[in-house]
Image: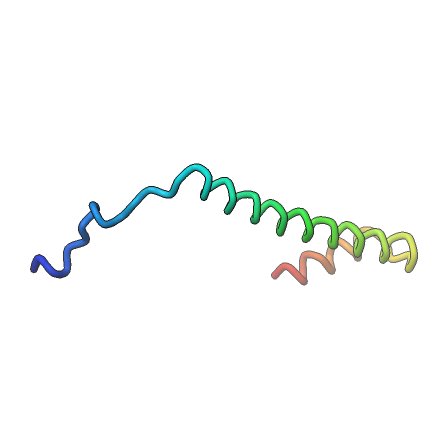
Length: 65
């Protein structure tokens, strides 16, 4: 291999703890908001519409695929 194609590990820096925590917190917010939305949709279709839980679960599985 030539020297140009080799990756120098000295160029890579490890992310700081502060940066990793901020990325993790951002992902947590996105995950939390998605969970809240899914909970609201599940509640709406089960309680307000009266859809059976089995059919609702099947619809969520089909949507996930």
